[in-house]
Length: 459
Image 1: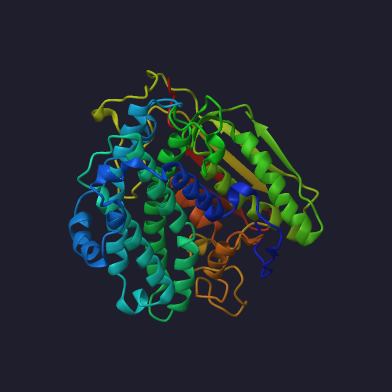
Image 2 (image 1 turned 135 degrees about the vertical axis):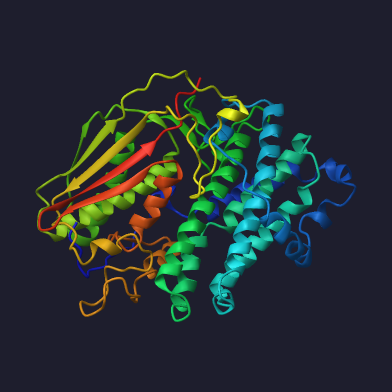
């Protein structure tokens, strides 16, 4: 990857799976409301459903310190698939809803407390205050459910409506935070921003995954089977458990994302890069397709852009898919014991379904000239920009630093990848026990190694 000062943005729409989910979740919320309105279950809540849908701000303020002191549940991907393969029975669906409710309020409270710990002048920024208010609002919609048992399908439908609203509310959290930190750059250091966004993104990945998993299971359950109405992928395929594809083929994702990024290059540069997938392209493993798609798209943006700008567009970008050797172990079942579940580490990462789960390494090799030694130490920082003037100090704040992230909320896309793609992609990879490593041969090209750990074999 050879970095230049050229930033080109995409004016055409993104692929549907990469677009913000606001419109899709809006239709889902309306779909759920149509199902339950009018509903005879208002009496089930003692006539308090409307009044208790949101509790007041003061009650949320009082509850946050107590909830944020509670430890995060030792979650594993086994928890997300333990309710069985779709279509779920009514009892399994209710169990999934109760489990989801037990996790989310504590996770939201932890994020609210983290925002409170920022300098007051930073939290006072309109964009960061907006995110703070969004988290308070979401917590206010969940607190009325605490102390109750989700015991009927009517309860579950209303709870799923709350989850859909929660996901929609937080769709643009990272871009809005980035905009706020840009406006507050006089009051907070780039290092503090990177640390906060790393922690916040990891927490957000887990919170969103928990909510989207239940939403997908809702629409692929026996009582509410309607995959087309789901805002999250729950195709009528036996390999899917909610948003998890238990037979995901990385080579297919690479080809799909490669076509998309090649379109961007052709639009902006007039040149369409080529790519080759080698290794073992028929490899499959269990993973979240949306996460892999995001990571691969960002890494290919870097490789394609560098290849074209270095005048090496005749040289194909080579993507090698290499599965880890199979390890002798008993297959993981959908109902593992409590002792077998992985736990959150310091990075708030979800543990794989079992420690013997085979993973996949994807190497992306380009002839884009490599990364300069003055740039290489800074590529993992959100506050670092590859678009600063040559007189600027590497790693300093620049006009386009977090601006690349903040522009993502309007559906735009930049072919210039290293402004934010690497740190965000690394966070997604590390969340499931994987990682990203970069090896640069300056003047020649770059190898990027994406290691992903699957969730094991599921029976």
